[in-house]
Structure formats: C-alpha cells, structure tokens
Length: 82
Image 1 (tube, rainbow, N blue to C red):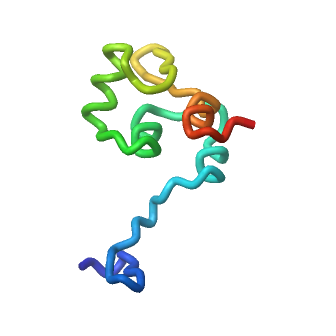
Image 2: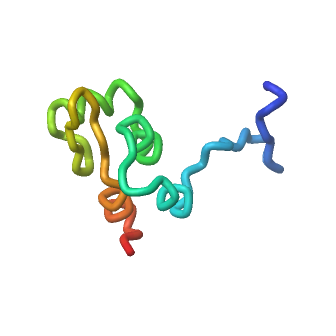
Image 3: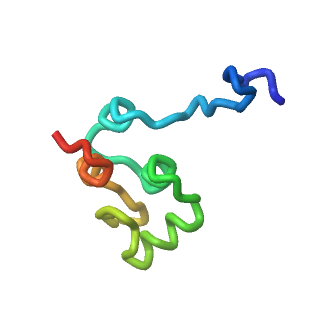
C-alpha cells in the first residue's frame, strides 16, 4: 500500500476522492466529462465515447472541442436536485 492511502477498520482502502452531494454541488454550474464520469462511476474512455455518441447518462453540451456537463443534471440523476 502507498503511504497516502487511508485504511479503514476493515483493512479496506478508502478512496479520498469520494463524491458526496456537497462536493458535487460545490462544482458550480458546469463540469467536464471526466469529473462527471468519476461521479457516476464511469471510466474516462467509456465516458467520452458515450458523450460523443449522445448516450451519456445526463445532458452533455459540446462547446468547441470540449464537452461540458451541467451539474444540475448530475444532481437530478442522483436524486438531489434543489
């Protein structure tokens, strides 16, 4: 194990990048596809393929050469819309 990984009582590594609703809300209005994919548990390569094909689980906006995901859509999918 690496020194920066926390270990819980059951000796299972705890991911320091756990996405809570508070962390998602703190992203602001938009986020990138990679961050949205992490939140949804989707790999980077699959996420970009889904975005390109129009099959990403939430709305994706194409702005120039970039993909952006409205955080509100992520919150709706997670059942936490305000």
